[in-house]
Length: 117
Image (cartoon, rainbow, N blue to C red; front, side, top):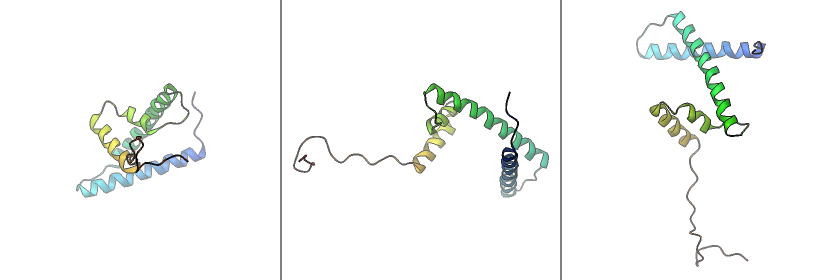
């Protein structure tokens, strides 16, 4: 049985609902659409439910990898059935964490390579 929500959790959920509503209203305004308050409430509940499902999946991927930290790779695994979403997430990760530059040495000894003393 899940622990009852704490006061902090309740506060975070309300902040989440507020943020969803604000984002929804902004997008609707851009698209010249009217927004029903019930639709916003239902959407925020849907997203909260989806977060619970994702959390369960992420924990399972993490345990399967014998780790205690959820990684970006775990999140990508959640996207594995939606190729376009997975590609967007991979692009996002490359912008946040670009790959290191390739090594400039070949491993062969030559006049441009470092020598041990």
